[in-house]
Length: 294
Image 1: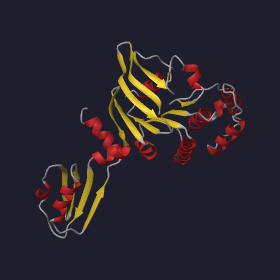
Image 2: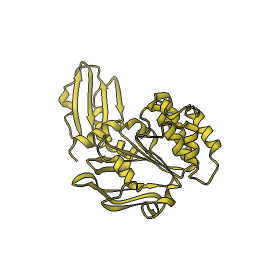
Image 3: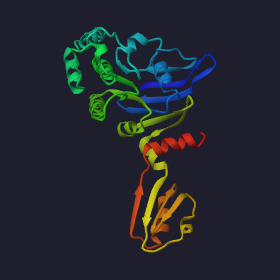
């Protein structure tokens, strides 16, 4: 079952490009990553999905219902954290969260206390006394206090220190185990690689790739480094799929894309002291899609 269905979603701001013909689905209980640099169209996509801005074309469904036509009904089951949060400065944190909880027909007091403890958030402070990071914590608690079925996060870790990011990731994983579906937008590739099952890469308002992270890594280059007991001509590895060959004393390193058996056969024909084969990280894959002019 798809919790989110996006079909040919397009948004222009006058003549300026927002997003163009965006298509992807988010499956139930999935953690789905949506990545691209600032200005690529991530926030526009999320706001259009949520019905906060109207599309120029295409449609978005959440829980099988049109996100604009059934917006008020759908939003009761959604937790949303925008990239920037703004609040009533004079309110205390606990009063703001109590106000937010009043929109849902359930008692959220225990849940608020639990989340505040996890995120190390002082409920008695006033909003205008909070740092940017602590305001982001308020947004996280606000987005999760009603135990939503769908959690949509737009650049959620901005302002959080590394320790708090770790706690937040663990919290998201717990929410996912509870049954929540998560759509996570980010330009920080490490957190997407760590959390997500699938990822969509957006470039200049268009989706350029949609894959499982494991599949992206399998299809990408492998980094190979070989230590040999004696000098070896670098031309030895001038075969299809090999690039960026470097030789430093008795260490040869290169990038390889192709049939692994073929390169291993080539390596097996020489004497080696050691070998290292590394999978590329998501950042290297991401840069590949941005640099190739797709």
